[in-house]
Structure formats: C-alpha cells, structure tokens
Length: 161
Image 1 (tube, rainbow, N blue to C red):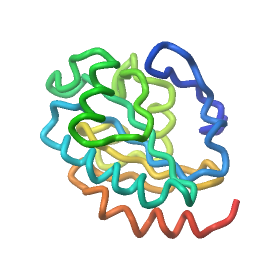
Image 2: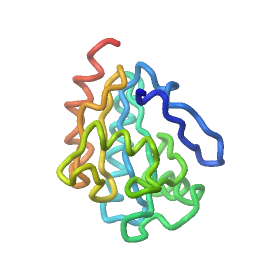
Image 3: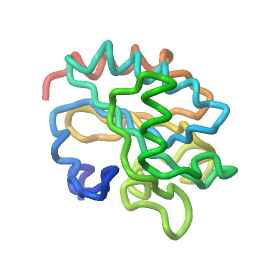
Image 4: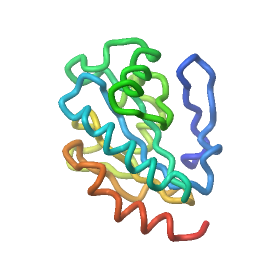
C-alpha cells in the first residue's frame, strides 16, 4: 500500500483518493482552529502561496483529540481559517490521529515516520512532508514553524518525479 491508495473525506462528505496528488509534494498537517499553534495557518498559507505553482499541496486535517480545540463543524473550521488566516489550501473533514479510531492515513504516516512518541501524534500541527513519489520523508513537531520547512520543500520541489 502507498500513500496514494488512501481515501479521505472532504468537507461536505465526498471521498477522494490521494492519487489525485501524484507527482506533487504534500505537506500533511493535523490542525485545530482553537489551538495556540493556530497562527501557523498563516505560515502554511504563505508556503502554499509561494510554492503551489511549483507542485506543493497542503492537506489540512482538523482534529479534536487534543484539549477539544476543534469542536466546531467542518464547515465552521473552513470558514474560520479562511476569514482569520486567508487559507486557500484544502481543509478536509475532521479526523482522529491517535487511538483505535485513528484515520488509516494517519496510521500509515506514523508508521513511516514514528517520531519521538513511539508513533503517537503529540499535538495539533504535527506535519508530515511527502515527496513527489509518495514517500513520507520527514515529520515535524508542532512547534516547528512552517517557514522552517521551506528549505526542505524547495529541495523536494526541485526533484523530478
């Protein structure tokens, strides 16, 4: 199984397969609008604005597993991010990232890059960088600012599929 085999639920209920992102560099992030790290949405948007035309996609997965910081509906999460941070990258339906009900995509991501917590996601705004061939190449802690990831993104964007 590769990352491109996973199906994810969009806001509104439709399901898409990640194969639509083949050949793209992906930054996959679990988020929460009411988290102290929420200002990172602006940094994520800046990355998207700067590199989307070169092949970057940011996939935003709100998660309410950490201190109830994403309690609102999917539509409310999207609206909040658009209004407060100008987000234009896609926000998907809310998911779980840890535990028995963790989304299969996140089980896969954690297996590929386990991090310091034995495969668990520590908090909101954990980031996974995926290259153009679907390989999960790096995991970033919540406190890592999006601007700190730019050089890694540029390197991956310069490599052909």
